[in-house]
Length: 199
Image (cartoon, rainbow, N blue to C red; front, side, top):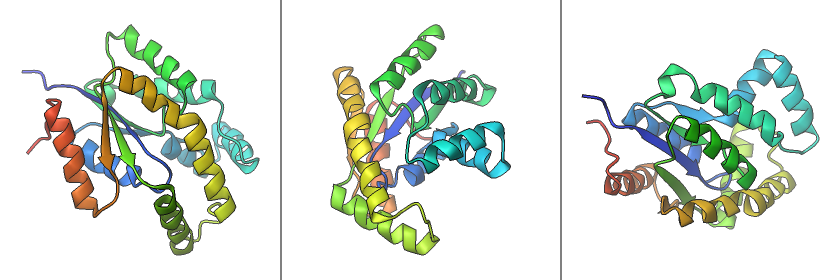
């Protein structure tokens, strides 16, 4: 018997905990997390050509161009471990990237099964990111930089929720609470769609 697929997207502002929750859900479903941030950071650490390009872009305070990001994601989703499903984190981040993803998935006769939206107030995101900056010594997490990234999220990424909401696949999850409480909320929402975790 072939295992059911689960093609998911987790969305939320910086500081919403989507990275942590994404890993938890992906592990429970035995699917890979495809995080553009992780891919970029790995390349930066390894000093690859891509890493150098991304570093220059990020140092200028900009986001990586859509086509470059989409190309990287298409390559990752074409790998064997993503054939049965995946959880996207950080992509698509705008409506252009939604179109890129739709076109790629359509070629394989697939589509996203659900979009997990972690709903966290802006003040909560700011507080969490400021705390993380202190704990991890992250020089990129100044108050000004955090506010700028949250602005970008609200202006560019939030509109993709409307696109997916029209398709009826968005599950809005309260992102405030303990890690376990939030994971349970996500699991319940996915179970309601017939996406069950392995026990």
